[in-house]
Length: 240
Ligand code: UDP
Image: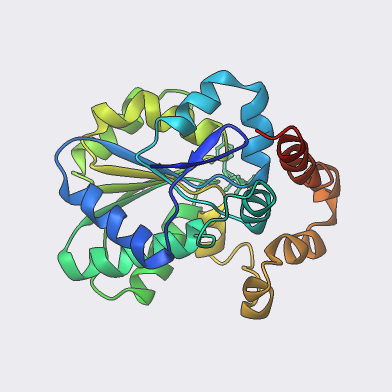
């Protein structure tokens, strides 16, 4: 059963439960994909049907961001908490290193995925990064073939939304991977190019504020985010 928040159904899980669900998907025959919607996703999905369908069709839908958990509270359907994409990825990698699963990193500017791979292997001894590819390619076929040729179990797809979600739906099944996870700008963080918010900010759910301090040009994009809460209030008042 999913918790519906502004048109998208979320899995109501703690980070530990999400990690177990992710592992189970990798252990299950066939292709699966996970998405990590934040408030920006919800606003975009309202106007973009293929994107909304891609979110609804995912095997795992994690609430990435306090905006989503606030909206859930306003709607009277509180979630256990948020599960950040990066936290989910870290948990999965710890398990993958232990069990010898193969990870492929897709996305970001040329050279970034390789840098991320080196850092992640240092952080998770034994982690098997079987391949990497940047996110600026014009033909999909060779990328899908590369993932298949490297026998990846898990692919972190970091092309930004909605591109990554549509890409996973369209190309995931042919890639031979068991699980793809849409992780936005995470490779830039893993590579050390973009700084992750310090723990204090994370604890308070203020990653967005940290990001805004680092990249003030995001203000235009971010100023729309409270609209998610306005939408949630509207739904609540209408008694939906
Ligand atoms: N990106 C990519 N291919 C593209 C467009 C974007 O690989 O065609 C990468 C970009 O380099 C960045 C990530 O996708 O690493 C998106 O980052 P952003 O912070 O905009 O996404 P968010 O996490 O906010 O969804």
